[in-house]
Length: 161
Image: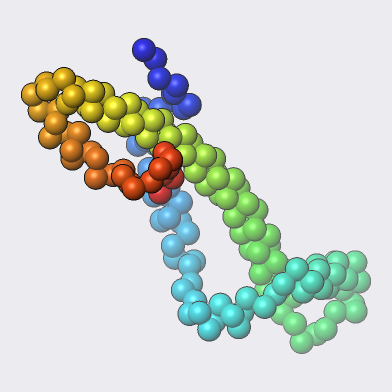
């Protein structure tokens, strides 16, 4: 009897080690630049919404095309450095979010596979318990605590949590 396996792609020990090393290198490189913001600071500094980002982009365009019209009170080198960092971080966030979504998708499939196999093993344990095979009554009783006996229809738990 073959059970459906939604994700048969598994990570080798070498792949796991390489991934962990890459994430560690990423953390080591990024951590010195991280700043912790309080909830109040996040509210205060997080006010640059999409409309305000368009303003920033337009000011940058004017600075690039007509620098003589730019305010002399601005440190334009710092402005450009902030702009470049902001653009780099946005691109990195988008790439990492894509990776995170893919990781979540893979985890969901592995969780589902594990859950279906666990249900099959539980059913097997109940069957073996009904045949009075030694040890299976205890196992089936232990596993039964994970199922709601008052429900009239079979309730599927979310295996991803």
